Image (cartoon, rainbow, N blue to C red):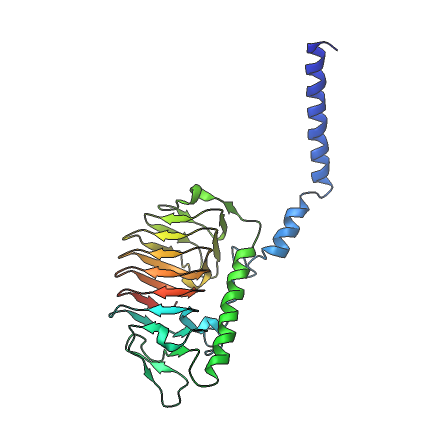
Length: 280
């Protein structure tokens, strides 16, 4: 077979392979992706994007992760001036001594404490407080971990490694976004969608929201439907504003005067520095 004949033969083989691929698609091979989406990334039954992550009822009391504005496992530190409103603060399995800078006043029941940093009806719960608080917190932390795992296993994504993880200046539509890296938000970021639309952002590294950066909601988008699943450390830098439910497998640091409209759930520690954190 001469070189010209060989070239024609190879082209014919390539066309045959392409036709076979089309035949596979026609017979349902593409349905594998649909099956994966149904199983690992169920869709929002009410609007656009993936199904919401179940964090428990915001009115479910201290046994529900959804009732906390801050929930951590090892420590919560605060520089005087922070305000955590719209829900409670919880720490487990660490004791109340690992909540610093909040000037806790333990209730006579011993079940919870109050703090000027956590306006009523918010309360502060720690693992060494009186029953039923230890059991309630164990359940809430399990909810937090389950929510993190749910957000982390969603697949396949609508967008993979968008902008190589540098997402400042973008407008994100509802959907599942996945990065096999850290994510930076050096300039303003917008979530555009309706009140029932859902966003899940998965990242295998850290999250860094830059100094003065604003996370903006448009079109009725709701912070309670934006889930940031962060495998590493999350840092919201000075004077930045953040929106959404922040789920970190390690720690979360808010620098001076940063604000959050959402919830922070960390599997190690949360560090505040003159911040406003408000539940959605």
